[in-house]
Length: 165
Length: 32
Image (cartoon, rainbow over all chains, first blue to last red; front, top):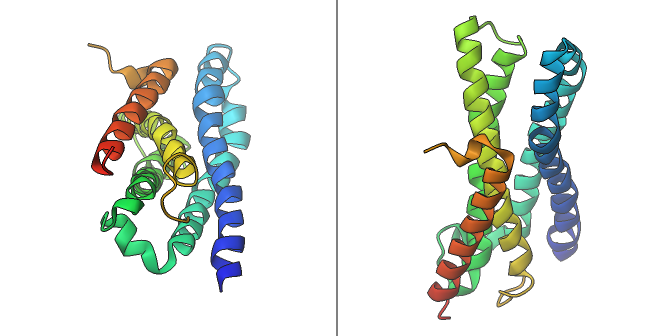
């Protein structure tokens, strides 16, 4: 059981987390600016047709796998961590809450609005413009939250190490 | 005031500032 939660679970958590946050950084550091330039020379359609849907597919499901594998590592301490029941769990609790807010943003704000932007869901031009703004701000919020989230994930096993996670 | 999340580097700076604030909160809550 220990091998599954702390060995396999941690490995999957990190691999899926790299894919999730890697694609989040791709969207924010690369694609947003690239799309602006591509729109100016009329080449944005190709990115939106062939790149964005595929990136979003791996992005949103990697978020699910990351969260579930994280919950698997916490195991029976899940509630104690999320309720900050023990001082030793404060650092991982902050990391876990930040990750949870981020997966909420992915599935509730980013993905439904991206479906409108990409034409996977019917939307008027006005709705598309609004969806673009919400999806952009949610994505930027996740980029901002990823910085402390990664700090607390790493610090829980490093400088704040008072409990084994 | 412009929303700092409008710009990529504004977002990164906000993330770093939030990290520093949360670090201090957690450190204090854990007893220094």
